[in-house]
Length: 508
Picture: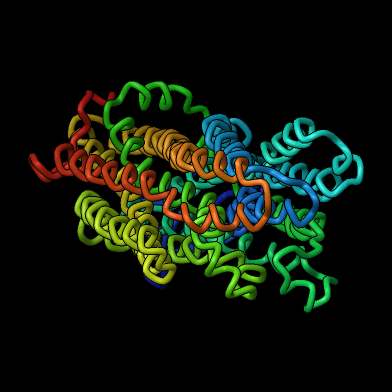
């Protein structure tokens, strides 16, 4: 057992030390104690936050790697329809969403340090399958049906990367005091979300390593899909080692199944989860779908700009980049203005600029479409941060009420556990919203897929795609209407009545 002497300045009573027992467990963590926080607790929290960010980042890199792989399958000799390509991006989104609940339970069971390490190493599975199975000559000689099923299985394993988010957010929520939690969770999530942009920027470049520059400019050119998997392997190993070597686990984050049961019964859990569908569901759903949407909505633009089409995957990575970087801003604003007010403003902005994106699609104006979508991504990122600030705010109001009559310390620990449970539930439900985004877009794509199948020559197929490039407009109208509903719910539940947030049910 190692003891760190965290004394305060001269003349003051020394702060209690932080004690690490075997396995880097901390038994007496209390971030609300300002003297201990300033004496060394903040340093410990920042260390764990930094390590959580890099491991979460790697999870997102792996989660979304199929968004670029699918638009390069034809160059690898594997032909899939647009609706089938949407299936290949939808499946990892779905698996990652479903796994978020058990991943959150794993933190209380094994500790943040151990689970971050194990879940990081699991990322090797989708990376190695993509590197060794997808480009294999065996798959290239199989029937279309077998190819599709093999690709679906390989893509599904990438879902483990998305599940890492829930466990990392629940874990970090215990390290920070309420007054700093919005910014800390926003920073942790932003670092993870940034992996989407990194993956969508890096993979288009690595798959053409060794391909002559002149060949790359052609519409069809050689690609090395194996590199899309191999590129992440050393980074996965490095981040898993760093988590095991330097992260800590908190006793307060353990044995909280009761907290999950109470959270499931709490109406606010489902309201907050519903709102998170609108923000994170939009962010991750658009992140998965945007490269495909751009490729099939603006073929003329991409044909005229081969550098953008090939090296930058149609600029699809920009949305995830903007949405990731804006997330801490949403948490920061919510710390000052309130999570509900910021969330409502974000849904209003998403409604307006989705309308502009629709205009861009219908007018075949790539600049208008992309610029509008970047603003939508900006608001989704800020909304993600504001809702994750809103979650602990709801529980903070209950702490104030319950601590008057009972033991403030025990009440605070219990409600922190319940807030962490809600974060895990909301993260899973929100990610399922991303699946919904892709389902709606896939349904819209069935029309253009049918037309392309009817066209027998490549030239006619290109003409059909160009003529029907507004195929995504009906889906975007659906999203616009949903943002109006999300905004109305935010106002009705958290702003229409008294400004103080109170749980609908008795907490303890």
